[in-house]
Image (tube, rainbow, N blue to C red):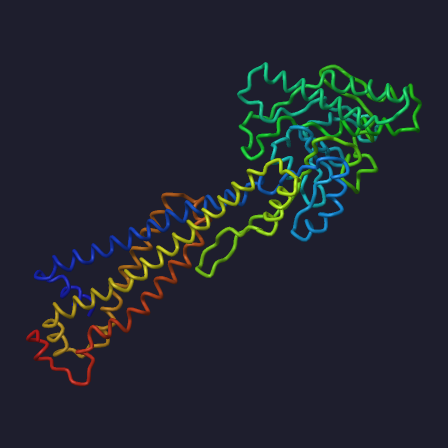
Length: 477
């Protein structure tokens, strides 16, 4: 039956018009599917890139004074927790320098110890300082009280700068470290103050810059950070300033400079001082200006839309809160990053929505119009053959099914062919990203097929009515 129908459709007198009609519709359907898949992959890559960008999981909030810092904690900590965010207690920015704890685990191996919410681990990966942290502690017996460390800081975005500029930044960093030392020293007596200054000179007289592996360009959303300094250095100074259990003479020798920028000190001095373990670190000294990392791990997530696609869901309550803090004077170290983020999310979501809407409208319209035109064309131009066929074989049901199935299968093969070709083109890595495209394609195909079924029966209503005049059909009336 199918062979007979195909011969009828491709008879010589109707072949040219029919083939042109099929090719035109199939080309439009194929091009629409190809455009949809291509745009889908483009928006999917952009969506995944912005969601996986760790720079959008941390913001630096300015604390203008010590009192402002404490007031901020009392006023905003609970609200921030409600919004799914936390202040990172063991890292801060002074001037353009990020101070962060360089801390292997207790067993002495090189695994980075993360804070309870993973914020410090995120920062270490964000600034690509994992290698420096892993090599910060020189191998030693974990049972010994003393330990050797590298006397280093990380020059974060010094790529392309002239030697004079790098030297100027190094000098400015030493000045910042000297200022912080004065704040840590506070009102100590003369002897202990001299010990603190001696330790400071020992620590920072030969400090050198450690480069970040391959010297990659810095993250553009973090480019204002110039140097990354181990917070452990400040911990050493703080421990010595408060250590009343050791003789002054022995205390002065608790930090020794070795060759090749190696420092030997007490293991306990490298840990966070007790007063800061459960509170904001160094919040009791006026390190001005101070920027505290504000960590929000799920600011951007994927959101299922009833139009059968995933777009980006942003916690607008948190971003609005950040803007409120900005307007109230708590300047964000990267305020422009927040604006860039909101604009990017808006554009990507609009592109995703427009791509699916355009595909649905075009695919459903063509998926209904194409088979309808095929059925109508078949009935108008092939009435003689249909009537002749029905005179000898009572196959009206099979005939209707075939004229419903042919255009549906043609659309199916075109879509599957386009999608298969695209998957071969993008390779195995594109398969995981393209999984979300199968449901919209399937839904459109099923809807178009179901809508076309009664339309197909309507095209051949003269053959399925109560009174069938085969002679009139045979004569083309």
